[in-house]
Every structure is written in structure tokens, then in C-alpha cells.
Length: 189
Length: 139
Image 1 (cartoon, rainbow over the protein chains, first blue to last red):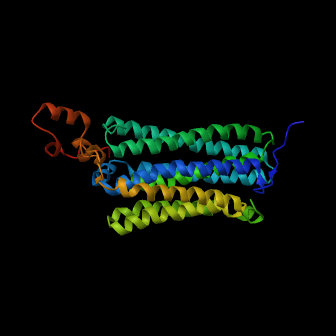
Image 2 (spheres, each protein chain N blue to C red; image 1 turned 180 degrees about the vertical axis):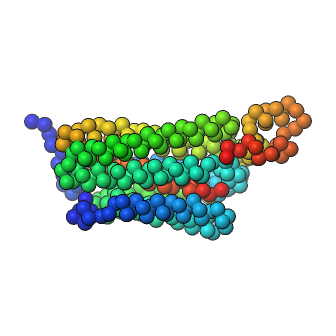
Image 3 (cartoon, rainbow over the protein chains, first blue to last red; image 1 turned 90 degrees about the vertical axis):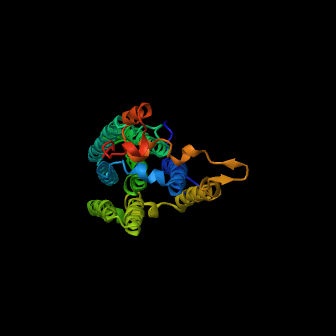
């Protein structure tokens, strides 16, 4: 018989849910440390602000819109899974994956444009932070999309529907990180 | 997701988030420092709250989740408080911050010149502000 994930007695929540919140907690430390370091540099050196003026606010805003919309489809997938409709949940997860792909494509075009103008990761500390923070975030987007495809594949067969909520929580966190990256890298100039 | 969660109008929440995004983009265009801070970071906090509560349903999770998230946020703040006094200074006891950290060593980056222009400047009659025409900026 296959083992069934059950509720942890100490935390009073299902194992999978507890695990995904631990992931979110560790991600807060990773992104939090990175952004805190960036803020320290940014507040101390005026040149960083001048360099940040070369990021494109409209591209950043478009990507924010894409991620917010993908968060909507992720939570709607969760709603469908709660109602026991695996096929609808899978369909909405695939829509979320499409959002993830759109985000990565837009980011790639943006980076291509910036690099062609000489704003590379080694150009200055600001650009180092820019590419590191946005790059790590983009890796999370790609990773989340891959996991979402796997979850959607099972959900389509009405299997493991609880996983739709778990990947949704992760995805909303990826959205949350971008919500803070956007003003830090694109708006405050 | 609780019983309330089934009745949440997620599209409405999304529309509010998009509206806030629009304000955060338009607000800083006024180029008023306090307005930029409020519209950029204040609205980011509101958006984060909406996503955490309405999409992640963090308020419906067991207390243990609050403990995990609060602990990690406190660690982040501790990190900031511990290193900021040094990092945000240029000198300290027996150390001096390298000049490259300020990001002013590459004139073309600061002024927005294109890289190849800067390279040409190195071979020519100078570089930096002399070539600081704003044609090289990405946007």
C-alpha cells in the first residue's frame, strides 16, 4: 500500500502544506538577504540611482501584470481543485504556465536589450544586483512552471488535487517577490 | 481554503491589484520624492498583503505558518540591522570600502553611454562627461 501524507501532530497541518511553507520561509531569507543588501548599497551610493534610470519601467510593469494575472489563474485552479474538478484545475494551471513563459520571454528580450547597450552583470554593482536578483527570481519562475506542468498532468486525471494548492502557494510567493523587486529596480530612480 | 474562500471574488481582487500597479507606475512620474516612496513602496506593501491574504490565504493557515514566516522575517531584519552600520559607511576601524562599490568607476555606466563609446573614449581624447550624451541609455 502506498503511504499517504498525513497531518503532522505538532503543526496541525498536512505534511505537504507544512513543507511548502518551509520552502517559502527559506525563500524569504534568500530574497530578503539579497534585497536588504541591495537597499543598503542603494541608500549609500547615489550612482546606483543614476544607473537604475536605465531600466525600463514599462517592461517591468508588463511583467508585473503578467505575474499578477498568473496568480489569479493559480488561485482559480485551487478553487477548481477544491470543488473536485481536476480538469478545470489543470486547464487553469496550464494558463498559469503560459503566464510564466510570457514572463521569461519578456525578461529575455529586456536583458538582450540591456546587454546590447553594455549594461552587463559586470558593468557596475547596481547591474550585478539587478541581474542576480532578477535572475534568481526568473529561475524560480521556470522551476515553478515545470512543477506546475507535473501537478496539472496529475490533476487532469483527478489525482493529487491537494498539490494544486501547494504549487499555488509557491507561485503566489514568486509573485510577492516580484511585487517588491519591481519598485526597487524599476520605479525608484 | 475556508468556506469564505469559496465566495471570494478573485477577479475583483486581481482588478484591485492591477489598479494599484497602475498607480505605482503613474505616481512616480510626478517626480515628487515622498509621492514616489508612497506609490512605489507603500502600494507594494498593500499588494503584498492582498496576495498573501486573498490568494495565499495565510490568515486561514494554522498558527505554525505565522511562526515560520515571522521568524524568517525577523532574521532578515536582524541581518540588516547587524551589517548596515558597516556596509552603509565608507570607512571603519582598520578598513576602507573599495571605491568600485560606489559604482562610479565606469563613467559610461553612470552617464548612460554605450560601452563601445566608452572604449573609444579610452583611446581618444578622453571620456566620461565629455561623451555623456544620453543616446546610450537603454530607454
